[in-house]
Amino acid sequence: MTRNSCIVVGGGIAGLMTALHLQRRGEQVTLIDRWEPGHARAASTDYNRVIRAISGRDEFYTRWARESRAMWLEMQAECGLNLMYECGALILATKGHCDWEDATADTFDKVGVPYYKFTRDEVRARFPQFKVDEIDYALFEPEAGLLMAHRCVLAGLDLFKRAGGVVKRGTVTTDAQERPMLDGAPLQADLIVIATGAWMSEMFPRTIKPISAIMGINVLYTSTPDGSDQFDMENMPCWIDHGQGSFGIPSSEGSGVKAAVVIPNTPIDINNDERLIEKASLAKTRQYIRHRLPGLEGQRVVDSKFNQVILTPDTHFIVDWHPEHENVLFAGGCSGHLFKHGPVFGDFVAGVAVRDYGTADRFKITGRRKLSPKESPSGR
Ligand SMILES: Cc1cc2nc3c(=O)[nH]c(=O)nc-3n(C[C@H](O)[C@H](O)[C@H](O)COP(=O)(O)OP(=O)(O)OC[C@H]3O[C@@H](n4cnc5c(N)ncnc54)[C@H](O)[C@@H]3O)c2cc1C
Image (cartoon, rainbow, N blue to C red; front, side, top):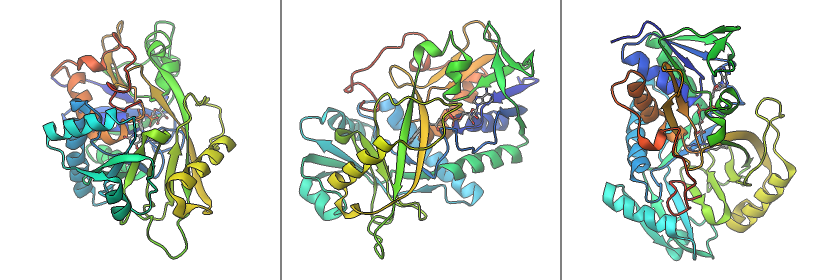
């Protein structure tokens, strides 16, 4: 059955991929965003995002990441743009804190994800950019890499429009009953998918706010040494460094090396903050670079981003119907790892939206609880 009208609110990666897959299922979809899709305040902004199957013992996201990788490659072939670069991802396992990394290796064996387990000396030989004195071992996932995030958003938007989707500008609000409203009147549609990222929390203070927290993340791009291609994606992988609360991406298309040192609970006013990085973050990143990437010491910051994630207690996404409005479906709860899953997420949400199947238990609004780092897909 096709609905008379489908609206997707939010043109970040979650909304765009959902809109695209709904449109391809034969629905007529209107995508509404308060700003221009691709804008710099969305979580889906920035040059790049890591794509990797590494998810600890969590087989679900491991399989989703693998499926997504195939779908990104298909999308890349379809639109003829470089959306993904397979530079691999290196997971550094710190001595005494390797539960998540140990669990990842077991999951990879089970699911059949290619990987190498490198000793400290093997890391030094293979990736001399990293100083790994306190590392126990490292996992290397060669089919992981990076997605050119902003380009992926624009490519998704283009495919959606080419499939007949309509894009509109507008700010959706909610009334006291959490009914979606546009221009002071209830939004009328058979299906309304809410994919407003971190804004979902303020829009749905009774349903989403209690199961979400919003955190700012500062990201700095550092110049690569003059005359050296050692820190380019052809020679260096993405990396995850839980021991140091950090992750990063090698220089891609001239971006400089991206390093994020996560400072937990960094507050952010998603509507009003200037998107400038904080001084404390600059000092922390420099310290981290000295420790882990000494070849970059003395290099300069060439770009920076200050952006938000919406975190659920268990870091699982939210795909569920509003408890009181049967045509309103939530799609988000990014928890810092949704981008890579974009195509599979959108396809899954589209199926739930047209009631082909129910949502997964882990994505339901109710029953959320904090997971230990051992259980958590993100290891945090
Ligand atoms: C620094 C950083 C690094 C990250 N690294 C990775 C990574 O390496 N790999 C990975 O997989 N993920 C990563 N993530 C997470 C990933 O980027 C997010 O999970 C994903 O982009 C979330 O997409 P979204 O569509 O849910 O939200 P958003 O991209 O924020 O989109 C929400 C959209 O809704 C619109 N909107 C909001 N309110 C309204 C309203 N009232 N009416 C209409 N429109 C509205 C906004 O304008 C926006 O366009 C990272 C996130 C950050 C911040």
